[in-house]
Amino acid sequence: MQKAYSRRYWKNSPNTSTPLNETNLNAMDAGLDIVDTRVVELYGYQERAEQAAEDAEAASESATTSKNSAAASATLAQSYARGGTGTRTGEDNDNAKHYSEVAKAEADRASQAAGFDPADYVHVSGDNLSSVSGTLADVTAIINGTWADN
Image 1 (cartoon, rainbow, N blue to C red):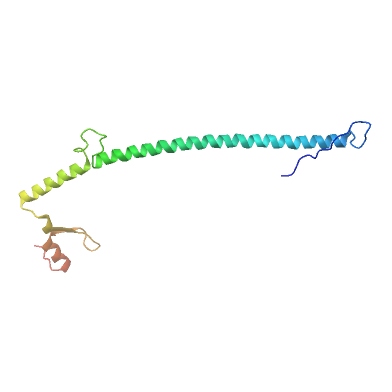
Image 2 (cartoon, one colour):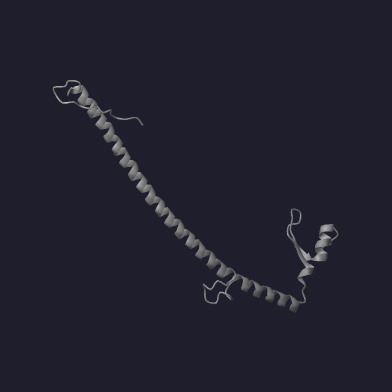
């Protein structure tokens, strides 16, 4: 940025090297106008910088709130998934892992009571086999093309 005004070093009368006339006064007036415009622009920059700082502070506070909320949600999700967080009463028996273990135990008990071995049973699905279920021997026969529908 270049200077807006060059100093004249005015001299008193009777010296005539710096006359007080329209040309010199307009030069001074123009310089003051440029300086005034620059000051106003600087205040505008300052106001925008202050607003940007306030916006950044608000964004930082929002990010902290989001982080804390996400952490609380993660803890609650763990509580419902596995328990062990200490955030809910009875969470060690009221969670997905516990109910999955109970369901598996009940399924195993029912299989044993029915004399059913899940290892002997398969489910096959594919492009040419639109969901085939049966015993391992049945499915193997279907795949090999030797199964006869009785």
